[in-house]
Length: 222
Image (cartoon, rainbow, N blue to C red; front, side, top):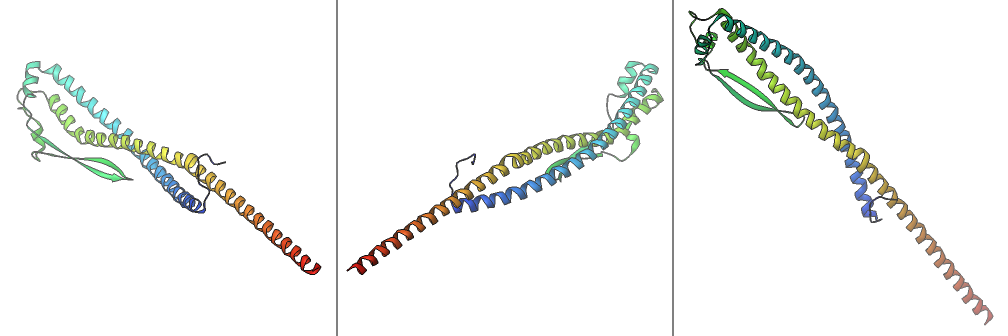
């Protein structure tokens, strides 16, 4: 028995068959999309984990250099050296479409191309460890931006995978079985109506033949 009320008509049967074809095709496309999203997501997660380790190592090295520099310099000198940054960084954000998901892309540029512009202080009263710390942070900046980009991409892909999975499950376990059941129900009702019509026609035929036979018998008796 159909789970939903449907009109057992040939028009409704045709509509449901078209719906079943569309749902089946959509189910296959969504499964392919889900599988491809999962493949790209897993590749991106592996890259993200390796990149995170490199970023954490770079930040750890920079912090170590800052601690050593702080130990060899007075706190006032250190604050004065880092008070006014010399270099500036400009960040531009754009998007890239991956399987209907807009993945962010970050591009940055510095105010000048001179690598020495990262040092906002003179070298006379500062420690070489401070130079190493500043250089470490400058070197790790591109990887930090790439890590932020990949982590956001992983988050967006994960959300899209979950939505696609729910749609696949809805088609596979609800819409397609329900449509198939309704098609079966309408087909049975139409077959039943056709048999009933044939039986009625046969009865009418028998009645007409019987009536014609009685009429002939009366003519013979006259």
